[in-house]
Length: 142
Image 1 (cartoon, rainbow, N blue to C red):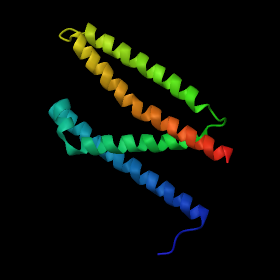
Image 2: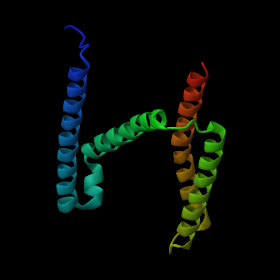
Image 3: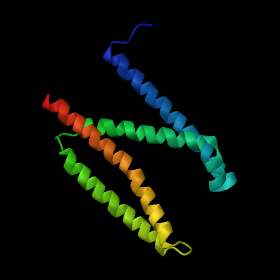
Image 4: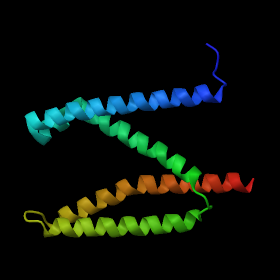
């Protein structure tokens, strides 16, 4: 097979892939929705399609982060963005942890665990965006 070099054909191929992805995602959501109606939330989460849906969603979001950083009009200071993002992550995690402690049946330890997990999960995208911005800044300097 020869590599496609015509930009129009490449763009059309990407549009076809996007359309197939949308149809596939709609089918997965439909199956999970049916599973939710018939078996409830736990039954839906036990379905292997739930894992496939979550993995493809996370991968899609990380790939779109790469595009959004490249699309930024002005070069943002990576360290300033990292600091702001970390502060926002700490604040959101603290608020969620505090709200968990206010819920009946949960203790301070539960709030610390929930807030800690949320904070750790937010570190991955924060540092990924920082990496992309520093890489873009290095490329811009060259």
